[in-house]
Length: 128
Length: 502
Ligand code: SF4
Ligand code: SF4
Image (spheres, each protein chain N blue to C red):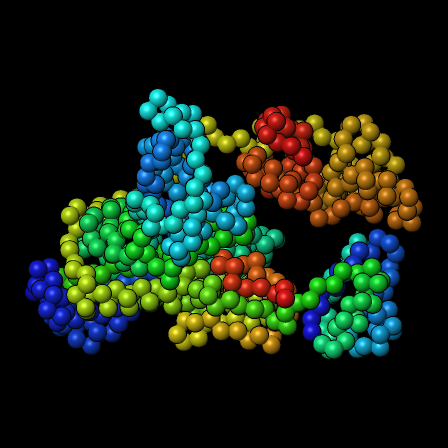
């Protein structure tokens, strides 16, 4: 299960991820991280059965946790197969097949959210 | 040989007409030759499905009791133009909601109505002797309106310039998301399936010609606003009954950071009356070229990066400067095909007859930019020319003195040749005082990546730079990076008065 962990670094540099691993013993796979001097945003993947324990530990350490989809989700009723999402995705998730229908290599998605902003039809989402 | 429109309609009525889509036509012409194709094919159907901001609908709501002369009208909080009569309005697809901003606009109201949802009508009036009522709020379904007539001032562009962005930040435009450093290319239009691409000289497309408009049987009104067929960028004004339209071919959209727009499906059946029509409908994607322009330059005349064809654009990649850049379409080619296919079925089943234009359109017409009676102000007109600066190898103490002397918060830093190499602010100096280990010279603490402007840049563009980067001053430099002045938020305040606030 994918979790988006955000934390402020104003109150010192608490090692949120390391602390959680130590406290819970759950192995955490970091898929994407963006940390600067003020705040951090880390996308992690954890086994579904440990998700709750991990969440609790991280919230205890002062972090914010959001449950994300495992990959971007497309609403087929809204999608019109334009392809506006194709060139903005850093992972080459989207492509048009020979009938000009949009197809997805979902396993490549790292949930960066770029396509969600780019889709004019509000057809893509990453929040569960 | 020529074929009369009467003969073509007779064949349609008898169910014998040979109808093909514009995608199939080039191969048929290649196989049978032009004469052969003229004999064989009666109608070529075209289609496009894309963002057409310049769309909207006229409504007549009917009279209330007591009656009201509606002077301002909102549909689901999106304001419609009410200056036409007492209970009429024109709702433009691109107008944004008062309460939800650009996430919901006129386009979304139209989509909701067509999808069968009710919308809230709110109207105000000052009250007159004949129309005493001052307010009304009611819920309306599409079928409750007396009339709901789509009338789109500018639809179905022949082709459209593609977009890229060589600037350093992501741009959110009506051409979609444009990644920095030329990271992607965005384009619009259906290429060889587009109606006007199959009749660029406007021989069979003109006023009164029947069309497919969002699933309804519509009509070409005439040339669209800003139509420029003389330069290869023609478009059409179209109309159709909103009540007959289908949600499959009418969709609202929002371009992040830009606003609401309507995706419209338009198709035009072209009667194959002579060799000229055979030739123009034999067009392929590789025959239609369009420029890729750089939206990183915020001016009207944006530079062209490369000219490409729709075949190149649809291939998914374009080579620019030795790099493969990915392309994205904003229009749906799958849906464009559906439009042409649907139109084909209508004609094959005798549901739509064709006609020649009742008035032909001028295929040589071109448009020009607005006449501006006053030039938009330039940076050099309001910049501060007496600027205190500092050399990069001076001591920080001297910088502090200069800041005080110049009564400013920004000190441009110059190198030995007098070129701008950085900027220091009072904040940088305070930081240096608290952290004395940073080094004693100005170059040790200056910001090297300076956001700057030039004397001839329009003030509005410089103002956007200040806003985007959340800064309050811009050094003004010439082509060789020599310092000419400074532009500050205070200078802008003088120009824009209360309008410019930081
Ligand atoms: S941008 Fe949105 S509507 Fe267009 S193909 Fe991608 S998901 Fe579908
Ligand atoms: S979320 Fe990011 S990686 Fe995933 S599909 Fe969208 S753009 Fe690609």
